[in-house]
Length: 142
Image (cartoon, rainbow, N blue to C red; front, side, top):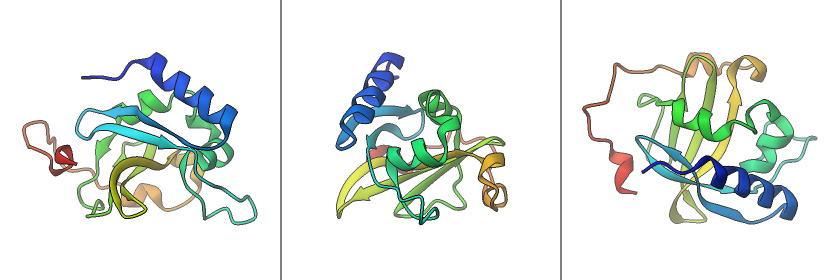
């Protein structure tokens, strides 16, 4: 089942207003399922640190308004995903979904950004495999 566009927009508005907390199942990915959105933390004086929606808003604002559509369009990068994180990408965008929060199982968006604007080596990390549409994914059971 796909999450509605209006729920993401409402979750985004709520988290921006409160600047804390989380929105459960605010995002959806066809292979992973529902993904929580956590406000998180970001300090511009430490630009390579931080996590969650706060970091995305402050460091990667180009993806915020369409984040739900971006996440749905990305493919799992099986080569760089591991037991703690699921890395998603395409030619334009990159995102990381964490599989735990404070030691508890939880799928939540750690970061997302446009590769070109990030100015880093992300494009080299994105080794997409051949189509996985017929393969079961280990992430669905989380």
